[in-house]
Length: 177
Image (cartoon, rainbow, N blue to C red; front, side, top):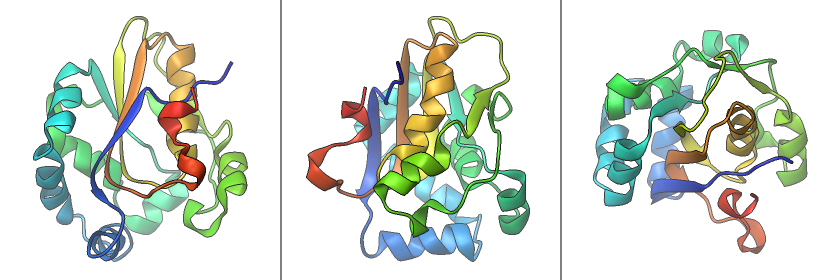
């Protein structure tokens, strides 16, 4: 049975001025903004708590093509500034390139990232995993990334993002479990 996320915590709402600044971070690209965003995230007590309780922190991986386009992985840059000693950036991988999520509606987003992630590590038995990404809109990407982590034995998978948008009908990834 597929799992959602146990929780997703955002530092801010995905609206002005954050939406434009995050777009600059990702697409300009301006990787130097990672430190600013990590500082913003660390101001939130709930984010500090989940960072402290995580056994392993995994930035959402980019497909090789997207990484080449941008020149950096924005989630990895954030993770390094948030909690460098817990970061595992090689175990969770993207198995294929996917269309940019920002261009798709909710159902298309879910289909787009279905089975797009795999885990190269043998086991996460009994471990608490924290996923790091920049934005959560529908939660489809984070939920797809969480599935192989649960299958590998993770007891809890949370996510931390810079910004989060309100979701349709009040349903979010934490309720998708």
